[in-house]
Image (tube, rainbow over all chains, first blue to last red):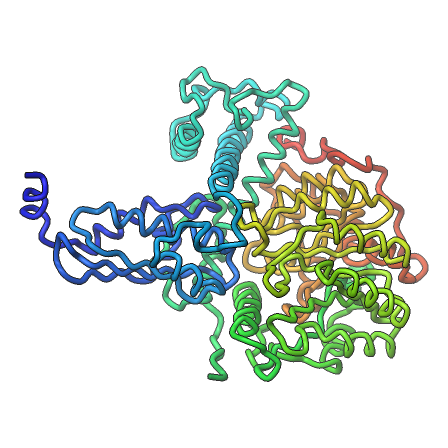
Length: 269
Length: 348
């Protein structure tokens, strides 16, 4: 009954549907969708539901981007597309990476992380994902508090430790913090303290300034990396900027400077 | 020497290379991928008038290096930090022999640092002793993401690395420059993780650990470790050119470094031949923290002088002309430096 219904309603798989599914795949380090970063190079759909064949190519800013993150994005992409109704087979390939052959073979065989990397893998990448979710939360927290500090001259760094979620003005910055808190299972009620550690524990007053400063260095780092990665992708793949979504956090006027003249790199076979 | 507005800046370029990435030296596709990655950095972060062609970028040679640094680039002294990359290049990437000979012929201008790989075990230790006997270097450059047979990286806290640091101690090699790069085993961890620096810096307090690229892309982890260890320093290779396209990001990097590790532990470098020093020196002397970033105090002329050369000169015993020396800041050796200078509210 269910199968018949699916067959009846889903005759083809739209490229747009594949793209929307890939919106859920995040670069674990930058905590942004790979679609916003321009990492999806192409999407092709052949055949019809229920056996549609989807082929996706991914690209990254350099050949030497971390292979563990590269694998995570490619493998999450395959999972996200496989879950779409009407999809039969999925091929996800990572282009132009130093580990492309290894990763693509592992994906084709559904070998998993350990099966793909063999002796280089020990356990799993869950800890790594968690580490960067925590960093994303730290950065979001700092953005909120620094905005508040700039807006309210009476507030001092030493006093931000008692600011509550309910004290934050509504908007993009606060929404992002709430999203990150939910991802970590931290409370999102208005009475919750904003400046907390990974487990949701507020800091003693004497540790508040250093906690804020440490969070600031995290925010600067993530924003810097997010924009540098975008810039390098635009440099590496001409025209890829058109596939990238703007990132207001940490943006600078010269981020979209015109790409410098390209002298041919392919000087040998 | 660079002079502007009546101020003289003694310039030490603390991270340079003499590399050969030409196709005939590339061992495999990774040799090409590696230099292409560098060239994309160069294209992405350089002003248009400083752009090199790909051909120029593959190999420069000693003559061009001397001109770019010492005739055109205001540099008084430069330090070679070779990356071997033997799995990518037939004769290695950094040309150690050529660099050593160039430094030997110009000892007042160039310092040669060597490199080693702890995965070479006992034989590598023998070689380090023999190389040191011949070349008498006081520093080494370690690239922890170097590929080595089946292995694609190591940690400074690995047992064999400790053996090598003990040997460094015996030989009088005091300055350990570290470049944390991607691909490290196991892949389970963050490949740019700098926590191993923390371990060795605590165990070898008589050695200096200079983390190149100030830990980028893990600036936050670097700052947190470096602020707790009085023998950890930050090299600005690759961070410098952000002055051009991303000046606000660069201002924050400098502001954070001055806050966490202080003005006496930051080293300028062009990372030649990724970039050339002339425009970087000129722009850094003109550089200022944007006024709206009240979380940082303005950067002072003396701080710029220290970063551009005096700090590295002190570590390497490079003679500085009379009258240009500056005293160390009166600051704590660990923990945030003068935090009141970097308080949004305090500055308002």
